[in-house]
Image (tube, rainbow over all chains, first blue to last red; front, side):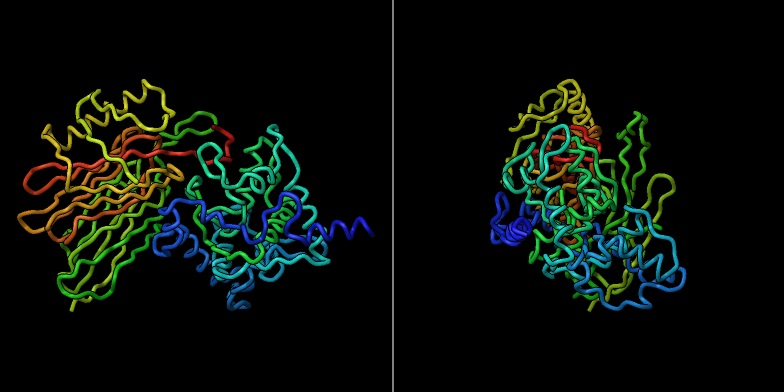
Length: 247
Length: 106
Length: 156
């Protein structure tokens, strides 16, 4: 019991060892150059707009039994609350979309990182733009938050680095000429200049793991979704910027 | 599915200089990249862009592999008369896209 | 804050010493500079280029070389007798030097274009304007290109 209480208090306080104080948190947006920020801010020239257009088409298209639009109206606030914990398993927005497709629409799920899934996820998440991220720590989420936090703090890969070492302890400093951001998932799916396309948080997390020469977890794996849950909770209260542009 | 997006005013005063922003969905494969196995990925880019205003060409551009993916081209034109602005992109492998917008000039 | 250089359109004369160390092999750098000089030669047909009138805006420190916003503005009344005919943009270190050639005219109202380029390595970006009177004007900016940390292929 005492151990659980201790873990609880560590998770609940924002000033646990190495964590960024809530008031000092800044989105990756603030670490970019002025021109890159302008690319995100201008809806008419943000390259993600093509995925948003496709997302809107898919949203209104009848797939199997029905279109998304047949059941759902506004999705405002939805993306800000994901990942969720459902029947003991953490589920992210992409997985929820696929669950709706298979269970409600009786249609085949979209592959991870497929154009369709990215477009739909972006279209849904865009409707929460400007809203604060609202992932909570409660009885259901706590074990997953703990697992995600443990992964964030674990050294891994040939470089033997933990996420926290760069993103909690050394944010703002330079790594190979680039400023290290705090790693808040405030704009996903993002148009990453490096990819020259739109991509998911899991793609970015896998890039990070490859960066430290670790074997990356598969898309949609429980490890990555738990980590995603932890990162969204760590960014709670920060505004969602989807679709973000990032270097 | 040749996707393009135009941002331009729908109304303007005669003689006013208006700004037009155009975006085209295209990978702009530069022809210098290689696969993990070392095979050269062939070039696949948009090569030409033109804007005509009631049939008269008012702007033209030649694009090269050094243009970023999903290329943005922003330029200006004088709002001379009401009518149609037509935009056309052409490129490698038979790529072609067109879009038009109407402009009311008062 | 941009730094302006006087660009010398002579092969081997383009000794624009970048403030940051570029990553390219010196032999390849030399070949690309020669290609740049040749491309400029083709545009200007050997006519001299003057500094002024042209303002090239590129971020001096680039987040990612894959997509670099840049804009060119030329000081010109854009009348039938005095206007910008063309704007050409080049880079010093890319595998081929051309970025964009834009053809304007009096109907443009203003000589102002914006686009997004790929810049492979730290070095010069050059904009050349061709005026209706046959003269050429240029501006250049020295840029530093950084590489994203954490790439997919794990290559540095």
